[in-house]
Amino acid sequence: MAGENSWQSLIDHWEPRLQTAFLEAIFNQRNAAHVDQIAARLEAGDVDGALRAVGIDPANFRPFDKAFEAAYESGGTTTARAIPALVDAQGFRVVVQFAIRNPQAEQWLRSYSSTLIKEIVDDQRTMVRNFLTDGLSKGLNPRTTALDLVGRLVNGRREGGVIGLTASQERWLSNYADELASDTPEASLVRNLRDKRFDKTILKATKNGEKIPADLQAKMLRNYRNNALRYRAETIARSETITALHAAQEEGVNQAIKSGAITQSQVKYVWHTAHDKRVRDTHRSMDNQVHPMGVPFVTGSGAHLLYPGDPSAPAAEVINCRCRRQPQIDYLQGIK
Image (cartoon, helix red, strand yellow):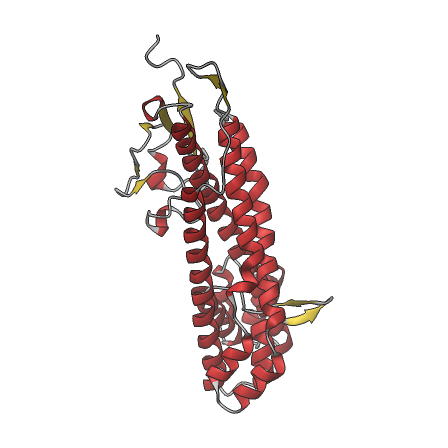
């Protein structure tokens, strides 16, 4: 089977592509928004109308959906190619190939990707509604709120918007804005996603008992939003790459079993962590554990995972996971 290094290369190949595809989807969503209509609806106090003018649509996330499908097919194809061809009892050569249009593979892919996109879209609607409602309740300028939502055009692309962030990230942003506007802006220095180039400015304002100028606060907020979006894109890309490749690996081995190339009893799996300080404590003890196919690995918290990124596992065991699972097939079973 494909070695640990080749599987890591596959992860390294697809993770940046899923990240790029997610950002493309977000910029599609931002470009679909009608700033003038959003501002006009807010001016009229119509949050529902403003939300409709944002135009949140699952179709805008098609670039990410396509990239996820391509990663899934790549994982299955790599798995199949690693299984040697064999000669059956009639003398025919059996070559294992991964079929993404296999009904089981197609069903898993359709179900998982549609659920994933729905979750992203639903969270966007919640976040946008909260953002618009907050702007309205604070009496902010409607057009300013609309531009803060979708971002301002910089070199033909909208920068510094909150579309693309999660509802919880938007709350981080709101708290950061409050800290910058307060008499104690140094409280903002604990935020990892801040633009650290402004730290001296914050410390100087604190020392002199001065307010940070409004235009500078706006720039700091815009950069924080950009950093938060990149962070979310990295998190989604890392998590979904691991899920796509390992789910395809599971399906690829299943297809090989159904073809008669191997039997389930020949298959075992080895769990590998990333071997660094960032490995979550609940996964550290799983490193180099070997389980028969179909037997889940058990994390330190007691959660069961068939593979890294298993969507049936709790989110705390899946998000940002960088572990790998390696198949081991005993081709000599029964004839040793």
